[in-house]
Length: 165
Image 1 (spheres, rainbow, N blue to C red):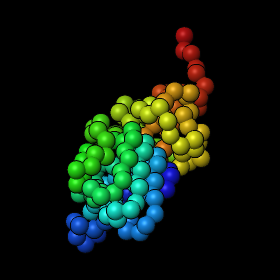
Image 2: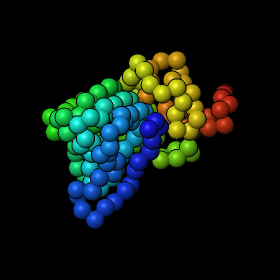
Image 3: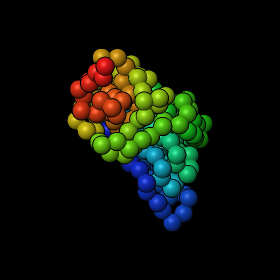
Image 4: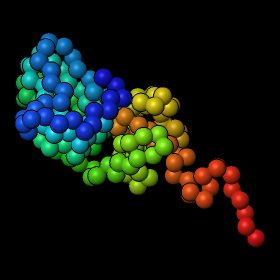
């Protein structure tokens, strides 16, 4: 699963799971944002599965992710509020990803987000279909690559600079 946005889900109990795998298959979660959910964001229990989480944000969920110790687990360049689960590390907690709403939608990264330009590899296209990385530097974590145009001063919203003398 790539460029996945899983947000604002609610269950009846805190032990609800948003993404739950039990089969004999490999599971990759790449450049995804899983945030603001009530329940475990991820649960992987089967021992013959290889589970890869890369360039993803797992923040602001009510419970920690659960990955069985018997699962082959690879975690690369993530921002996880709950950095470890069942002894397996989801990666460092870089802090609040500073989600913001823009003209492109919700759960975009604010200009000062610690998840911007944080990874040296990643998906080539984001969830909006934009090329990654968009400024020839590092890749952003999560489903959306930053859009430099949203950080322009509102005075120059038209993208034309006007000089006043």
